[in-house]
Picture (cartoon, rainbow over the protein chains, first blue to last red):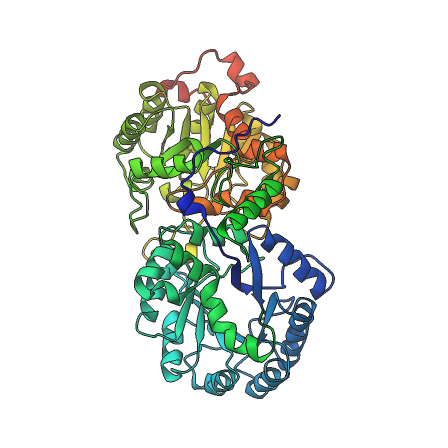
Length: 280
Length: 323
């Protein structure tokens, strides 16, 4: 007989999730498995333990800061394999490099316009305030695809092509009709990152990829509103647990929690999912 | 269409299945608890702090609020250090305040973990106060913030005293991701490797490494664990199902639950028990048994200690140690 009690007095109102969780930020790199299909299967298995039912995924099985066109094609091919294995649970974002504009647009045509992918991923090849990104943003907007841009502020110094939240604010202001997800929202320096987004309504602050420092989610809700905050994990490099804990542990109301854990991302992706027949 | 009750039931059962924590328990009725913010068993949190972190106000950084927060989530005992001790020079005052707050909020809940900085003049008096005046059973060290490496002789002297007096030693390898620290105060993580020297010298030591998983790899930790009685908390353990992988590498009963609250969301640590597939015994060990063993079990004495009689913290004694 177990000596563990079934209940030890928990504030039930804080505990209720009451919604399936959608994760805006996962990767194939770092997962076990010989194929993208095997890798994504393991990802979903662990995600399900925390009630995460849908994931956005990008960037292939290798990390590449400044990928060549060939490397991009390979990374996107791998992601597409994973997406096609679970088309209604795993949503692919096409990875592009603004330093290779034509290749970027070709990849977006192949996987976004003519394929099953629903978003665009930009990482650290070039700071996103650069005008070189404008054609990429315009193409994505025309497809009703969301753009997820890595943003970080490192006390130790950013990479040369690594965007800050301020860079993304600059880009988003130039494209007020496009939708942007600010991956990491500045990372551990989120107090600074969130400030950059306050006056830019087409940016959604995403919570992934930093330590679960208490107060992050509350600050995001306070500064931007719960309808502009999106859950992401950055798994498998980050733990689903630590990142979900940022939302379940936050002192916010249940409506805000549900928006952050799924409904905001569902709403952002709804038009393109519907257009591709991936909704429902 | 699912209603809330169905969701709660499904989630609760999923949580139970993941932890294996409720064998034989009745889960059919009033025992329902909502997924996932509840400990699967009475929990000893080995890594919390009282008072304020200087760079931001944290939710629950008042002792009463923290105690209430932790208790409501199933924590039955919390080992508390002091944020003040990380930065202040008057260690006796910081330790005294920590002791007072722990007493005020119930010593059966908060266990005070005083701090000693062995680079300070007359640090031995701080150690003596922890041991004799405050009756502390654990000290918590911050080598990175106090500016010493684990290879320094003074650190060895402190460990020797800890062994002889039977006090457990927690060593914090990191407090913040260096990329997120205030630019005027960037502090690198502690290199834990030199610890093996002291583990070999003082076999009765009980060491718990806190926030060690970014500063040391799992194989590095495994080497330290094999060298002596070393434990680790869950703080800063990252990666998908990382606890599952860590439990497969490290010896049984050496991983302790530590939330790093209020700096980190408590739930982020607790949910690791759900994210990883662990045996019933492992969950219980992490939640309670490993910590209890660290705290209560007598350490075997080294030969050197046995030949030197009763421990003494008098400074003149230290001159005879040869370290």
